[in-house]
Amino acid sequence: MSHLTSGHRRFLATGKAPLRLGVPGFAHPLVAPAEWGRLQRAGLPLDWVVLGGAGGGPGSRPDPYWRAAAAPLREAGVRLLGHLDLAAGTRPLGELLSDAQRFLNWYKVDGFALGRCPADAAGLRETRRAAGALRTLRDGTHLVLLHGTHPCPGYASLADQLVTFAGPWSAYRWSQVAEWTADHPPERFCHLVYAVPRPHLDEAMRIARWQGAGTVFFTDRTNHASRTGRARRVSRTGRAAPLTFVRVDPWESLPGYWDDFVSRIGPGVSE
Image (cartoon, rainbow, N blue to C red):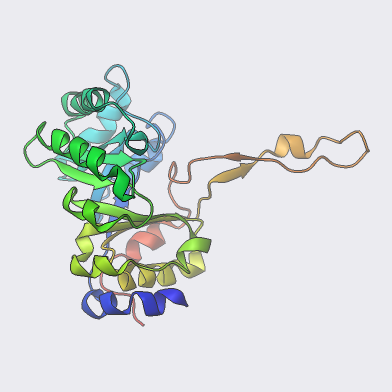
């Protein structure tokens, strides 16, 4: 498998390092109270938790449900990040900073997860400008860049952590690591993988360690759901209409194997 050769140099140093959890954001606490509640379990190896969801932000006014979800995590020392959409580097800086200030004022976040972050050299200038401005809002601002792929090396100096993979298991199991990442410790990188079957959890963790990622989130949820109502319809030819799908956020709910997943996070999986 490709990751066994592409990540070999990283694994020699990090193969037994413990992994930590980066939670990319569940659905709103009003509709996902169990998900947010289970993050309060003592001893969870949480690196950070995102508020605002994959496509969200702080909203136009303080949300009591978000406040209630954030408070116990903050009191437990969990790092909270507000989700900000960079819109591939096109978001006006003033608008971005306004959202960031709302997150700080209303939810007392520790930093920000920057969604739709550019990964090419052309996007470096605007990302550097945004990152520098965000760091002035709070001492010790923690920044995570949600590239979803390996960016060019220049981004490594802009943030505390880079998400260098975000996608399905079918792509992750054959993914390769950028050579330049070997110059940085595992805590600088995160992998977010959906549609990971339970029998492949150990393999997914091995890939993360081979590729030098210290923070992960794996789930068996997918990014589509069948629209069963349409599946029952019959077309004009008398045949069943084809099954259609709608996109969903694979991170909005807990993995079906959450307890099993959490129990495996820690010392390196035995080879």
